[in-house]
Every structure is written in C-alpha cells, then in structure tokens.
Length: 182
Image (cartoon, rainbow, N blue to C red):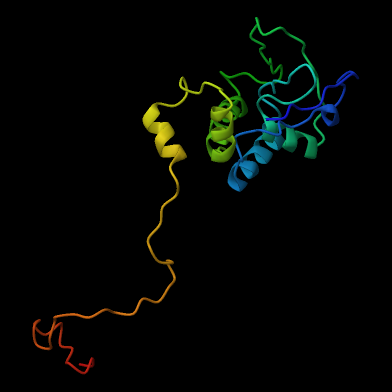
C-alpha cells in the first residue's frame, strides 16, 4: 500500500489533519447520524490518534464530522507511553445525565458506525499486517468469504418445471376447485 504524504508544517486546526486512505471501516449512514447527534449534544468525548504527519490513525469518521461541525482542534503530543485522558470539566458522571448519555453514545456510535471494508482488510493482511489478535481463523474465513447468493436473481421470474403431480393427487385446499376459484 502506498504511504501517505509527510507534513512539514505544524498541525493547528482540524483542516490540517488527513484521513487514513486505507481506513478499513467504511462506516454507515446510521452511524454518521448518531455520531453527528452525539457531537452536537455532548461534544467530543475522546481523542482521535494521529501520526506524526497528521494522518488519522483511528477516528476518521469522528474527525470528518467534527470538521463539518467546525469543532476546534487541540493537539496533545505523546510518544504512546501515556494514556491520554480527556477531562470534561463541565460533566459529573454521578450527577449529570449528559455524562452517562455520552458514555452510552460513545459505545453505541462505535457499534453503529462500523462496516468493514473487506478489500482493505484483505490487502492489509496480504501486506503482512498480523490481525490474528483481533479475529480468529474462523472469523477471518467468514469475513473474507465471497458473498454467495442463489443461482438466480432474487427478482427473476422462474418458470415451473415438469412435475409428476396430477390433478386430484392432493385433497381440496380450503374449498378451491381445480379451476382455481371457490
């Protein structure tokens, strides 16, 4: 996979960030709606990790929605050895229902806005990225399986084939005669 561009200027605004061109989550329309509502009602609740060049590692959909909503950016530089906690000074989990709603929204949006791009996952796997800690071999097989459908289009009209059933082989079906009317 090609690498993304390198950045030489400082990251100062949301517009300076770049989405991951190989993001394996396509997202969903319903997830986007839930994310937009959560950001509007509760504000950002977690960090969006970026690499040294401003390419988003995780949180591409959050970034896109935050940019659309003109939510300002604050960059916290770290080397990955510290957990970065986002302290919301206006929320109190013990007394503020908005804090609990943010907790539920954060988890539900993640659930609703996940749709794997199987082609990107296959490419990452083929490029040597070890994903075995995240999927069992059976889960990989199911995820990478070709979508299979019936042998005919689901909307196709299928002509009946020959049969050995003759008139009178089955009892009267609720008063319907051989002519098809009662």
